[in-house]
Each structure stands twice: as structure tokens, then as C-alpha cells.
Image (tube, rainbow, N blue to C red; front, side, top):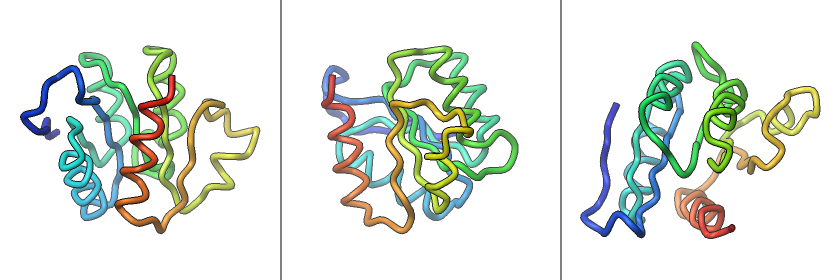
Length: 132
């Protein structure tokens, strides 16, 4: 687990929980989000990310869908049960799975399909966080 962020005031910084099993992608995403002014806690496993949710509050869950341990859809469902105000964004190569009604993914979740550019995901995160 890595808690990281910039020196910006806490009032303007979002706290993001990032769950992505591809280590290189996770590190690039975390670095881009920190550079954009957010605090990021990242995990390579959905189960570990869920354990962190029990002790910390986050503004956004940014999660892959297909991961070892707990998958991203189950993680998102549990996250919303714990904190109904948390925003959810899936990053996945399997967008049809997240969008399928039988998946029980949180309906307000945003789905961003891989591959994507880091600037694109940072912009989507900022848009989601700015929305009421």
C-alpha cells in the first residue's frame, strides 16, 4: 500500500483508491494522478483494497475489473455499501462485462476501456470528481 500525494491543501485533493493488478500500469496511473494533485492509495489485489476501505475514506474507487482475489465489480459493490457517496470508475479491457446488467456493477460507475492515454484517465477522474 502506498499513500502518496502532493503538498496541496487537503481541501482540494481527492483521495483515490486504485486497484489494478498490472503493476506497471498501476504505478503509471498512481504517478499521473498524484501529479494531477490527488492522494492515491494503490493495491494490486481487490481483497487488499477492500481491507483498506474498512479503515479509510476515499472519494473515488478506480479499479480494474479482472483481478486476482476479489474482482473489481465485487470491490465496487462493497465500496458503495460502505460509502454511498464514493464515485466508482472501472478501467478494463472487458467493458462489456461491466456494462452487462447481470454484472450488478454500481449503476453510477464510469467505465473506461483499455487501452487509454494517461491524460484521458486523469481528465475523466477530474470530471467525475467535479460532478455533484
